[in-house]
Image (cartoon, rainbow, N blue to C red; front, side):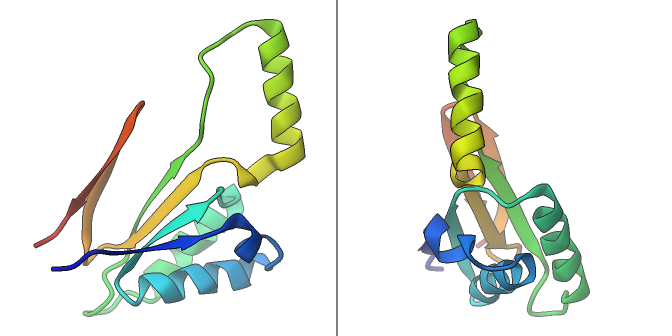
Length: 122
C-alpha cells in the first residue's frame, strides 16, 4: 500500500470560512491521502470536523485520525513567556502542524516530545 501525504499551507486555508476549510480537508482525506496542514484548526473547527466525519461514515470511509503538534517551550522565564504570548497573539493558529488521515489508512498517530509515529494499516 502506498501512503500519500498532501501538504496544505496555512495561507491556503486561512482565508476560508470554517465550513469551507473542513470540506477542503475532508475532500483530501476522502481520497485516502494524509493531510499535513501548516498550523492548527480552532477548537470549534476540530469539533465540527469530527462531527462531519461521523455523519459521513460508510463502508469506504471509516473516519479520520487527527493529531495536532504545537511547539511548546519548557523555558519558564518571565521574558520568554511574554515573548511566546506575543508571538501567539500575532500568528495565532498558524503555528504548529495538523495531521489528518483516513482511518482506513492510518491505524494510530502517536505524538512524543521529539517525534511523530504514524502507524498505518496493511
